[in-house]
Image 1 (cartoon, rainbow, N blue to C red):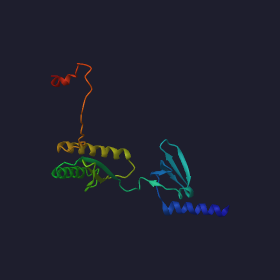
Image 2: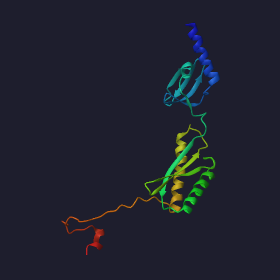
Image 3: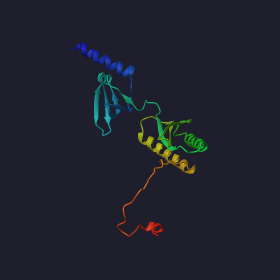
Image 4: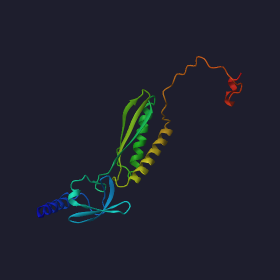
Length: 197
């Protein structure tokens, strides 16, 4: 029993002082549950869940679990995919890339400069798939803010597409009408008056 206690204590000390995956106040993900580190002791760590439920983990157990620490994670990347019609002129595509890049670089408090805008695929022979790859100036702690920033960027991209008259069109579909059933009624819709002669 003494040997097992020594082993557990040694593992807890190594975990706490050598691995040191978090500090008090860090927001972590353990066992698919997001928690905040409230208190750290030699043998245990106390976490607080979103509903203020306290959970106490032995440090020797935490040493065997994957821990995602949002606070210590680097700034997060993001990607926005979109498609344009294949007949869009190259000049418009170039102008579109310039304006998207300029907008991102003007929002230097939200984004890192030099986003990558890449042409990824041609799909169904009628659209070109693009991706904008960029990095936030924040890490994974605040997902709500991430979606707000992303939404503002998407709104600006839609404005750019409209300004440049860039659109996506479906492939034309051939419709062959060989014969129609006889009309049962002599009433036609109001917008068919030109065809009623």
